[in-house]
Image 1 (cartoon, helix red, strand yellow):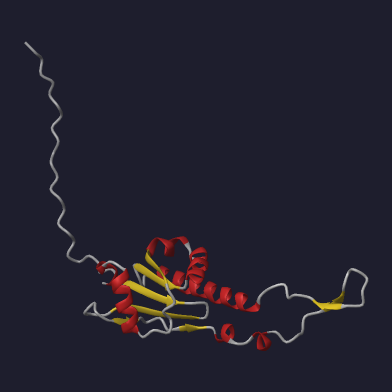
Image 2 (cartoon, helix red, strand yellow; image 1 turned 90 degrees about the horizontal axis):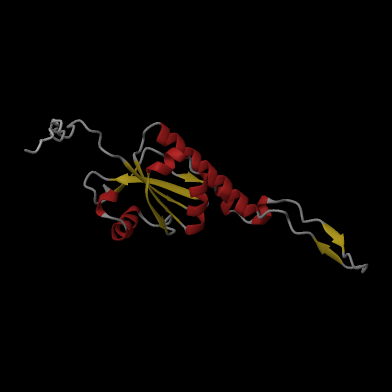
Length: 177
């Protein structure tokens, strides 16, 4: 006679019904470069892009010529070899790169504030590869968690319908809802 071991009886749990009042996920699509950012969200019919309540951001100073941004000529010095030749010193920083970095840092701050306020649940970032990489390093951890997709293209000059068509071919259909 074999002894049967009784296993403890588990109560089966039925899967929970989805909450009917679950919050709709709000997606923001940010189209940016080093001096301009536009904010969109999918329209009511999910076939168009509508501007969000966040206004467009621009940095006019990043588009100006360097001669308008820096007033002084670079310093000059004598050659070290003992000749009478003089050479101009290189400026320590590229002023355009600094302006673009400052704009990208401001954009990261705006996205962090909007995330804190709960204005979006998912984020799609569209920017040139260099701007995208810099933005990625400046985003806070909570904004990084909301990034659903990144697209390395410069679409800041494109119309919203063109942006929607290009993204529809690159992203899964659920990303633009």
